[in-house]
Length: 222
Image 1: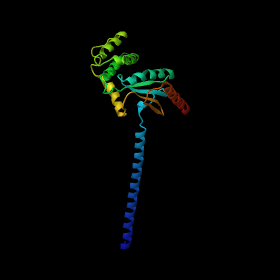
Image 2 (image 1 turned 60 degrees about the vertical axis):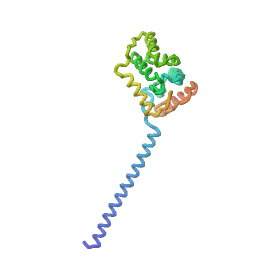
Image 3 (image 1 turned 180 degrees about the vertical axis):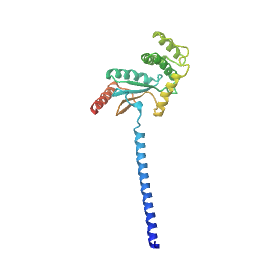
Image 4 (image 1 turned 120 degrees about the vertical axis):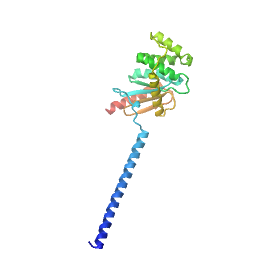
């Protein structure tokens, strides 16, 4: 092989290698760009299973509540009535705020009554909201005992000896923190394709219109 042919061969090899490396760099850049776009989309529209209706439901309401919160006290009966009227689930999560002295203990107590029956647990929450202005950290136990007596339920001295109910409440609270929720009540109306948040006072008429619109959208999309 002559010196000239050898030089042409070596030059061609380097040119080919450089071209392949350049192509690889471009592919990597494109892949990184697509990855960033996907991450941005997920950040803006997180796929959160909490903000989806349960199986068999097209539309649902989701509420993060604090039993010591006056705004939750006002919102709860509005949402319960809407759930009955429009025949949709109302999914309630505990979000006891650190600024409230007895809200965590009340949520744990509600979980105890849930363990007797979910209906009784929900009745206890309504009872706490009804007497919220009268309840203090020191009187919560007495109010709970009165509720238990009226419902013929034995209330043990220690309702959560193994901390199971406290862990459930803490898991809901931590979920709210992970979702970057700031206060209570935080309310959503959700379908399989939409999530609408309600951060102001809940107006029954506006809430009903939103639920009807979502149900209509879901029916039309089938």
